[in-house]
Length: 90
Image (cartoon, rainbow, N blue to C red; front, side):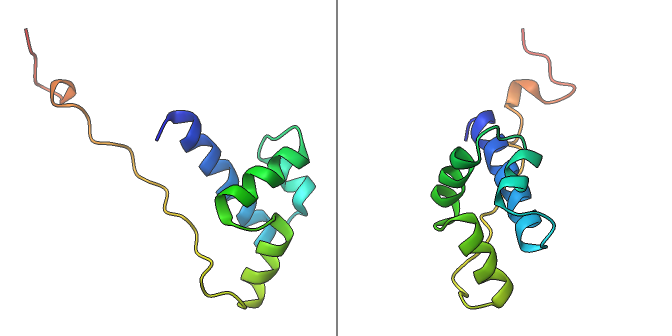
């Protein structure tokens, strides 16, 4: 996963949290997490979660779709062997 993909995932997960908690509608959530275009946000959201923002948030709040899960955000990758502290390679 590239840094940009990781950033996008974090932004969309934060937007999902805002939507499910009822703290924002889709357009407001899009702007709060840094999207300039609500339509682009909606496309990216649907691509990641499988349904548009509003439908996804309603399904999660109502508990209608047990298949909806939050994708895991991977932790930082382990450092390369040459980057481990105390190890100097020459």
